[in-house]
Amino acid sequence: MNVGVETSQRRADYEVLSPWADADPVPLRGIATRPADVSGRKIGLFSNRKRAAELTLSAFERQLLEKYPAAQTSWYACSTINTPEMLTEGKAKFEAWVAGVDAVVLSVAD
Image (cartoon, rainbow, N blue to C red; front, top):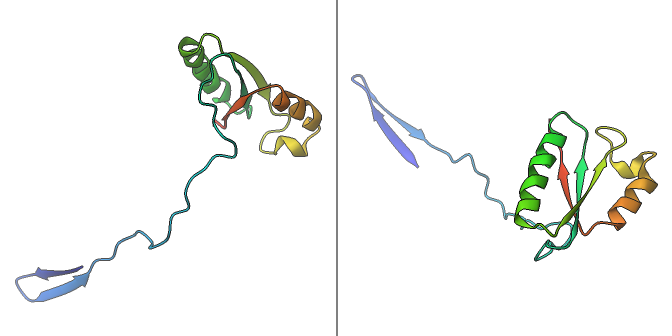
């Protein structure tokens, strides 16, 4: 788009460019299919152990159980902050935990 600006002394033209790139967006998708209903399911609550993680997950858990009283929760806190759990000494414990839940909510809260 071209914009003309007139001042008392002269006219100046400026070309205005959009900050957005022309790129094909990649469709978002989860790493696993979301369950249609969580009633009666066990939902894993994964904390990265940062200062707001437990607060965030506690608030989520409260709302989840209000809406789906038959749901269950299972908590897991990472072994080492800022390291994928599969690369820590907690790998076996983590794998066992994941096998025992139907879905996971992760909180990475600073």
